Amino acid sequence: MNWTYFYLCRALDFLAVVFVQEDFTTLPVQVREDIIGAYGELTQIRDSINRSENPPGSAGLPTPP
Image (cartoon, rainbow, N blue to C red):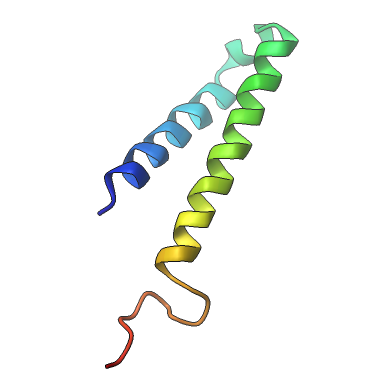
């Protein structure tokens, strides 16, 4: 497993928890927008890693020799 990917997913998990907390609505608007922006950027990075490690049509299977 790629450790960068592992920690990226943990960061996304953390931000997802922040989203569902009732206190999220009490945060200042700029902080909420920053959190939402960070979540979007991290999601794009995660998806990019997924595509590079598992190109379309590969289904995660090794390339035949």
